Image 1: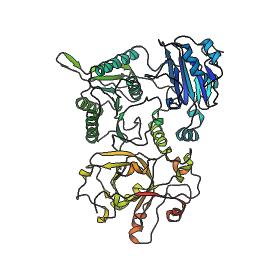
Image 2: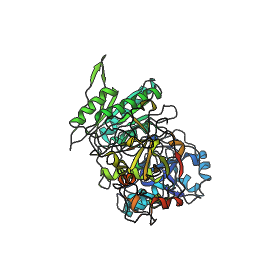
Image 3: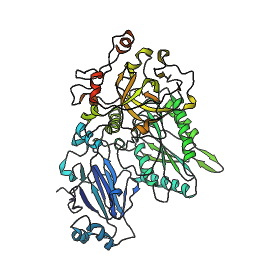
Image 4: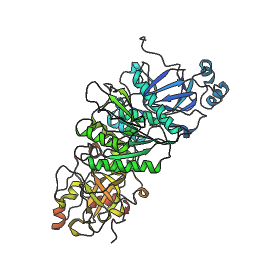
Length: 570
């Protein structure tokens, strides 16, 4: 075995259950693992990506999900640190209910070591992404460098560098301590993470948030301002996230189904629309100040636009948020942003911390469009009846009456009002709530027909709160009904009154072309009347298959109860 390769046979031990595995992590040692798995710490002090695990006796409810696929991120790394609560008797009893190798484990167990319990339990997301991208998406291709722990879980037998080293690691530790000091004083703190594209802003946001979690601490908040690659929701929206559990997975595996404090922006970049962007940030800041505890911390993950208008936008954000701290990633291969500081009563604000940009390994996918598709795929996988994208057509849709919703569409070019259904057919939409106080009699329905939806102007629309996302799988012009597939439950949808389509935010094509059915209802019913023909003629039929008319297919599907709450009183 090469000198840089270590043997991990002594680390892992079998359990009674075949889907469990135990690992002994030696004091001050680091283990790096690619793949997907659940984990809990039975004994010792273990830290991963800033989060300190709480050790305790085995419990199903104590497992924490980890997702570290080889293709989209670094491995999950676990480090065992010195713990003053060494109790060999307690270790023995915690192991006895899980394995018959207790004696061999205790022979090597020393003060400062930790015991980890792994579980291999696959969700719909794991299954769908493995189906689409293969096992190499999760695990390294070189088997000689890995030790197989589970079906989609491999520990590296070679050393993998830690996330942060040297001055960058020191700066992050100093920043974390400053934030905690503010919290101990009973004061809120606001921290902005700034840097060029692909410098590690999102990862640092997760690490800082994990570091602030603790039983005696208020939950940290994250304001995710990156509309192109958000942390916990599909692209095109801005979220304020109250964090109650650690973020130990890649963003695609952390998608929330039901969204709160999330606002629709409708684009994947900020060019040309900074006013609505800043309006959403102002609203989100107000939510944080009104909802959080006085000692809470807010972490702001900014976008990677730091030149020209992007720098001007960051200046405005600094003025809006008035942060206590700023962390700036410095890169030698591109532009850097310098935050302006001021001195008030002898104190400098904001305190600025710097670190080197994180270089992405060559094995990681860095194409923005692919990463966006992964987020949308992970979100919509929850709607698949069984764990394969091929079952998406079997998902029972909701029926939504035209008159119950308003429509908002972001497009590159204007379109005639009578083409609205062509624009919306087979599209990925945000399911939004429009404030009732903003609705007025001035709202105009299409064609002046009270059974038609309202068409909103993207340049004049007020803030829209996003509840979740869905796919308009069919439009019935005679019944004046949208059919929408979504992972949300009816109880989550009762207040939804706007369907909003973003620009260049679409359901990945494999949801449409990899279906097992020979005829799937992705097409509206054509009518012989001139009115319906005029509306129908521009509609797109998206499929490689010949489709039957939706009218004939309705008997094969039980359509869920419609959302009949109108936007305006009739």
